[in-house]
Length: 259
Image (cartoon, helix red, strand yellow):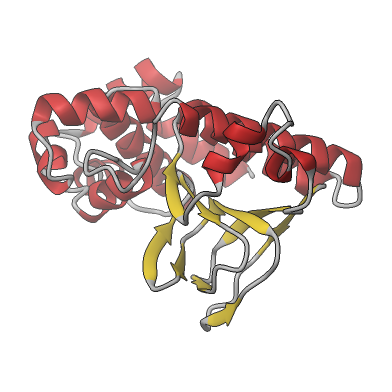
């Protein structure tokens, strides 16, 4: 039996254990888990696999939401060697570990979380979505992909936080690779595999998203926003918004005033 729920972890640390396997997946914000003494950070690109009876602490920040999937350890897929999926499922829960999600799995989790919000009482739908996520994770584990124990793992959320912290500065792919402790070529390869876009595209997307937010929520001038979001000039921001978002600073500002 598989069941799942969308919930918010408390900000104060709690410890417990249970007699079922569990997957804790970051949906919004950030959370921390410590399983049998091994710590892990969750964001929207990471999940943590907790085997049955593993004692763990957990807490989250004020914006955190996680998708928790619970599996009955007596269900045939994880309890019966004769079951077709036994080998695959046993590998999922052979030890506590963090799973780094790629862009497709990330998209599936975000879609599922939206459906949980939309239909909180639709248990059958939630079970099917949770099972789909479980099997997608199992396939990746079987293929030996996406573990944060791998020193080459990258979290796009962590990269975004670095960009936002240094948004007004000139940021290069070399800078982002250095933050991840990887060579530029390896960072580019791994980041594109995980996020589905290149680091440079991600950097530009982050700058534009922040600029659009400032244009619609503040009274700052376009020139000031251009500086704060790392564009070389007001015209550079205007051209980028027109090319990649099909709009202009003046339209965004007018739209906010009309709203």
